[in-house]
Length: 210
Image 1 (tube, rainbow, N blue to C red):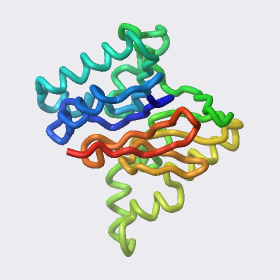
Image 2 (image 1 turned 180 degrees about the horizontal axis):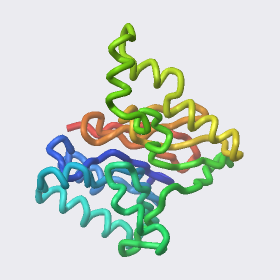
Image 3 (image 1 turned 45 degrees about the vertical axis):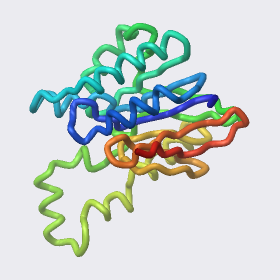
Image 4 (image 1 turned 90 degrees about the vertical axis):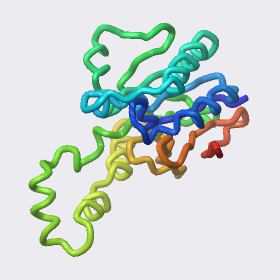
């Protein structure tokens, strides 16, 4: 039994989603809280081409079933931004809260800022022709340099300082990690990871094997 489980970047609606592994994970996990930290349903992909499997439907059903007994929070990401216009209506799906971000009180007393992370992605705000132009003159990857200067982690950590948070939880980069000020859930297209808080207040990245 975990205190809380955080997953992100599932990308339901794509072939890259490891749906069977996630469904098995959700069937066997025991937790008081489940946080879906964005890009759970890939609206971008579904607008381009319809792709959906029976297992992906079972994932939705399982989450809805879990929400009858535990606290489930769905935080919007950039690929499921179609739910963001509903924030002003205090929108819910069954018992699932739909939010843009949420404050999480950790067992160790820390105040943690939880968001998907896309709004801290500088490259999402730079037009592709500009990236290609500067990339032509840069040695190595231009995008890697931008992230080194103003990456998601750095910008989130600045936000924490400005708003009095102790740490953060996000997704978006598909890069699972735990540091004192920045934690990332990873994804369910490649890493198949979840970020968890145990009942004794420890934080762990768990991987769900085949």
